[in-house]
Length: 128
Image (tube, rainbow, N blue to C red; front, side):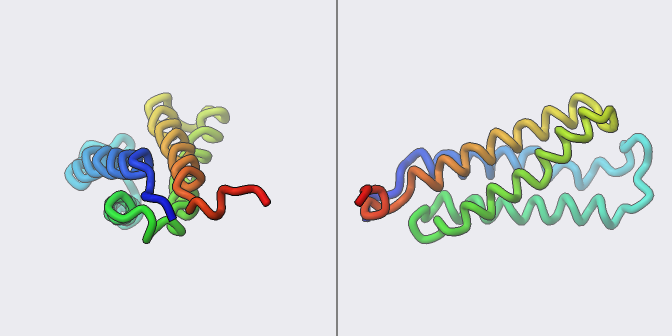
């Protein structure tokens, strides 16, 4: 097996840093939501689960070979917000800033998929 690509490490570490920077402040922003949330448990639950995923991204960045099989699940994690944000925007139900964040998630999901492919062990890359 070859050494995992620095590309995968960088992608997952950058995604984690971005996620921590964007998500952590949301714990202090509930009062500024317009319209106010009627289900604060869903708001805080979303932020908490999303933050937990950032720790998974750090784990993958630290040991790509060991945690490689989590990568397809991380693609699904990014699709879970990115696709609905795109669809809801096309239906006129969310604003452009929500779309922008969704597109960032879709881009990260694409990079995660590329990381999965590029980090394959050498014996899986050969065509027989």
